[in-house]
Length: 320
Image 1 (cartoon, rainbow, N blue to C red):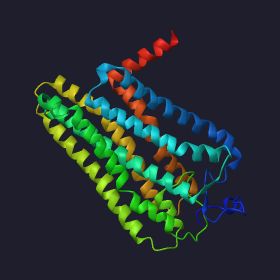
Image 2 (image 1 turned 135 degrees about the horizontal axis):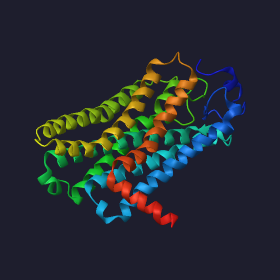
Image 3 (image 1 turned 90 degrees about the vertical axis):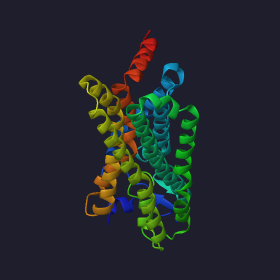
Image 4 (image 1 turned 180 degrees about the horizontal axis):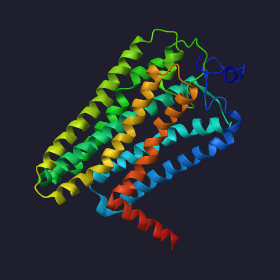
């Protein structure tokens, strides 16, 4: 069994059949007030960092360029990811609520998975932006016009929101006969499937197809774009120009790694880690939802000179 008898015993005997028990750090319930402090700080940094990136890009005319429009999409996606999970994660740690209704759980899983697909799509668009900027610099402004960026943004939203409902809506009609104890303090599609005793083949196969057609395909296309970028950069005679070209890609490469490594880790834990401690599942789940939104503003603030200089100017104005 995934969780200790202590967790099972903590579930209210009057719990509604259509509600689920959120799991924090099993066995450390007495330490929740202390554990909530770093989590509260992380969420505050996620919200503040991404809001600052959006504010800087919106108010600085020199940043109204394709690269920074895509960065704004990334920051907005990360901000929404933080907002979609903060109430259950901190609610569990603060003892405000340890139960969630089936409808709320399904809605949260829709936003979490949809935002993950959206972040993957935005990272692919950013890879395309870097490919055009380095491999076809003279055509950059004619290819990535404002109209094209709007169309790319609409395509990202449609891809991330319209493909998921068939598999998410079906969760409403499954029978959940196993103990209603989730593996995390938020809801995931695969976590709800684990509790179902209905036929889940459609959900399993459709979800696998979605992962292949979105996350895996995006990763392959991002890798292909960097192969083309590397080929183009190595053809540059000047070593200084090579360095500058690579420098413009470092932030994006870091963002890609920050996004894909936690997803791969969580997938491996869910697929092969049934024998692992519940603590490992909880940690990997929290890293999956919090690490990219936390790190992306830091990465782009440190590695992107334009963002860094505008943020320093913003802080200096606030101090004075």
